[in-house]
Length: 130
Image (cartoon, rainbow, N blue to C red):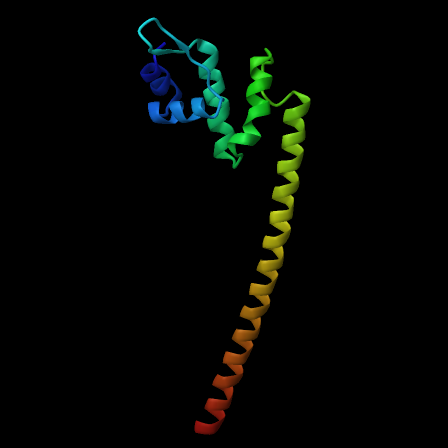
């Protein structure tokens, strides 16, 4: 299939496919007239790339998943290098969640203090005017 058909079937643009190609993730063949020609396996690769990008993986992180698919596996996440990337990404997400939890706690404490101070100020104002 030509690049336009692959783009349509994958739900992406031809520009995106060329971008993936420059990063070595998608491999077209070239026809005699120089057109990019893709086989059915590249559609699966593009779906894998897009799914991984959607959950926050970078292009370098995606390489082992693509290599795993190209090695003939039904899924890109079953190879040791892919598992290592998944473990690292999970650790990053866990660390990020820990940081977010600390920020949430700090914001909650600030809000609690602000409300208490406001109520105290309102009470003093009422006592002076009342």
